[in-house]
Amino acid sequence: METLGDRRPLASRNSRWAQGLARWLAARAITPNQISQGSMVAAALAGGAFYCAGQAVGGWSALLLIGAALCCQLRLLCNLFDGMVAVEGGKGAADGPLWNEVPDRIADLLILVGVGYGLDLPALGWAGAGFAILTAYVRELGRANGLPADFSGPMAKQHRMAAITLGAVLSAVEVLWWGHVYVLTVALWLVVVGAAVTAVSRGRNVVLALRLRG
Image (cartoon, rainbow, N blue to C red; front, side, top):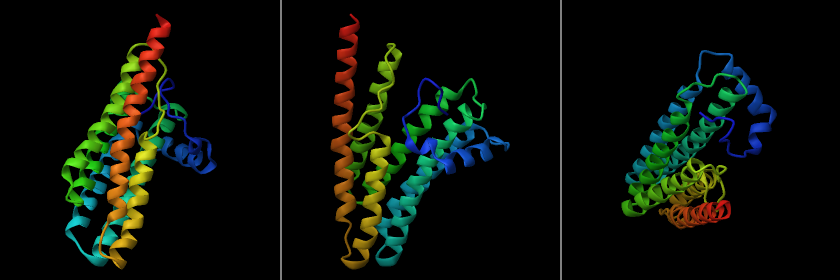
């Protein structure tokens, strides 16, 4: 669940469909924390589908990759609506900050490690998850020192999920026509390198801001 002081800038938040669905959710007996918890379920399904896609062949592998891509987007929708229901819907809770952060870190872990094991590149998956978590750690370290939340890229959460989603969809076509998943492998490498660069960039921003503050 997001709070007013820690909201990732998202154009979709101002769209009519998102606002309408957020109002619908807010009117139900659904809490922002439950939506945040749902993102972990979506991530677990995505990670499991990525892993199983690596064990399957042909059409089954393609279907699992498409399912994984959809679950990655469902994870992002949960991340969008937990904050909207909390802030715009006025249903925020005292323990919201924990549910805002912890499910996101677990989701990154489940998805990226699942991709790695599905590609038979577990070390690469763990590296992606580690750097993804590090980007969030550096952002929260800055906030803990009184700085604004830094959601900059080049491989922030939405960029990571976009890369993995696109890689999964294209590899679903690959596996049907050529029997391999090179695009998803490239996507995972982009996430690993990009997340590492993002962590370093955010760390540099924190250092510069703290030095200027003196």
